[in-house]
Image (cartoon, rainbow over all chains, first blue to last red; front, side, top):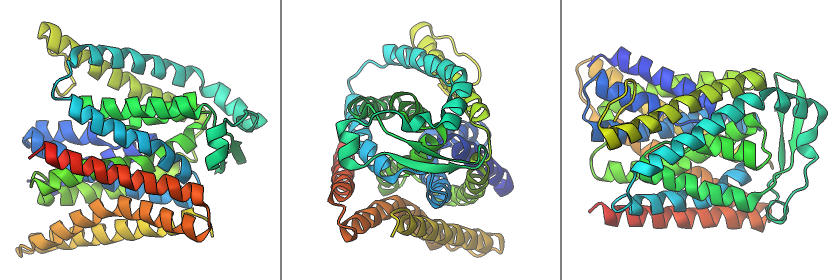
Length: 293
Length: 92
């Protein structure tokens, strides 16, 4: 095995994961299977361990920078973890075909709205509009509103969390989609916080990064107990992931919001395409390129 | 005390320990010495770190008498434990 190649793969996954608030499994699993010929179950199990590495390496930087909203992460993770367990239970019986199509449409919509709202979010930051919303009762009860310092705009961004019941419900569905369809949670958690709950994109990314580690540790522990994690393969991958995530977390706050949202929109386009490809493969048997089916 | 500071320490310690153990294990492998226990210890450190961060958050909330935050952390820990239990039972 080429240790350097695996490590480079990890650097890329960790960097993208930290920059976008994702786990990085979308990079690790296809490359482990396609390039190194690792068995799919082993690849998924090993990557789940490395998702924890991207999460804690990225989250530690974001927590230090004050970008992560820890209370909000704990609050939303209660339903995300419950949703993931429900999804895993339903995975045995639920027909997934239409779910892939529905999720593809949702991701396409979220992608477009991320790109469209990029400039508007910068204006909201400059005018302090994130603090102008009224907190709902749950947000007020648990003190979920917070602030962070935006290095690119050089302003302290205060925000008030809104629509928490809807956020909890959608987080549950995101967890369920994660358990049912095997997609990472970050791709849904970030837009939920940003577009539903009035959390700025950078705080959403920092909070999602913290949440992912907690969610992934549950599934990775099960894989580990069943002996599916290849710890020798995980070593260079995790080393690369930690390096990449640390680098990504260092620069994320320096990037202008509109560019970050455009990048995130691009990632969502890929996920939307991947879900559509799975739907097409399951219904008509045609395999589209660039997606692990 | 800011809630983030102790959580940051726990996350950083987890990253440093797992990174060191993985690096030592790989260095030993390159030198022709197999030491798999290092990889296992690194993996266990990674697995334990997120839960340790939530437990730390719970402890800090309790110390600060922020009982609502503590309730959130405790609820999450209970759900995680239940999720792990159900997943383990399902996959037997």
